[in-house]
Image 1 (tube, one colour):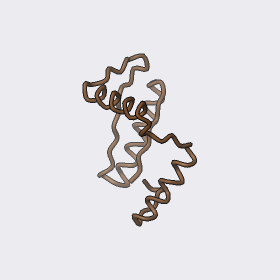
Image 2: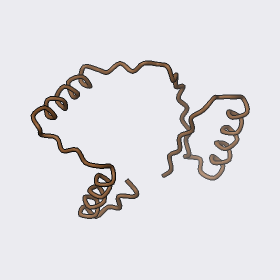
Image 3: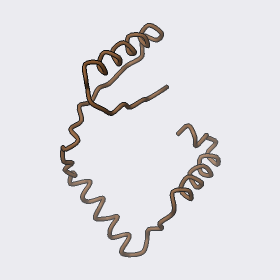
Length: 93
């Protein structure tokens, strides 16, 4: 499976290129799908009540000293070790 995201102005030329690519991929595999989402870069995100509750709990855990901050490299190393123990390839997750 492949998943690709393109972000940019939806000009007529860009739409035509993507439509042509979609049609070519459909000829190879009729199960291929394409999704389009209109994204307003200035649209404000309004967190749900569940989001707010999660954030409150995360902040409370931080205040209680229950969270451990690690570097991105350390996180990637930990993820690789975890998936290795589970028998999966972390690079494909």
